[in-house]
Image (tube, rainbow, N blue to C red; front, side):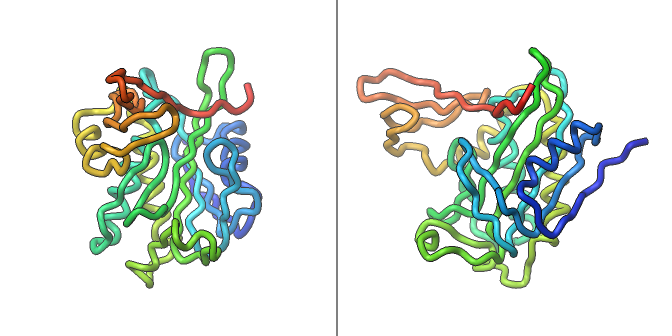
Length: 237
């Protein structure tokens, strides 16, 4: 039987791209790619993601299941990663989540989630979930006011110690169908750093939580309620 494995490499352009290539070759659900360093890492909307040594740069392949909620997938993964980190590092402050894909501690960005899918017509062939976490990597001067590292709370922990629990957490939720559960919605509400704050994007208003499909709920000044959707970015066809 073709079992999932972790492909650990010293350096490569992107764990996302490598995971897509492995999925194309038939790699099973739960296969992962871990890099010590990425030279072309990317974040949401194609933004460059600084991926120097000492951080956790990881992508996991998911084979879709019937009824999978792609719209809420990055939030579901973010919740799973936050819970896993808090188990591994018991003294870690509660990790906040910022819709649609950021992990936050004390108002600073700890990491992010990126989800991409390969489609054939209307059929999702596979999903790749990328997780990037600041662990012991050096932060550029301009990032220090807005970014945070796990080393500030657990100086002895390294990315390889985090890889197995994060892969396990992401693999599990990549196999979960359906909308976000009441438990997930409650956990997200507890961690929601946007809740009750004024936002300008995607639409101006006040953030009022999320839906079971992972849409951001925004209440405009005139009382109109907007559901702002995100989802899994399509890659190729």
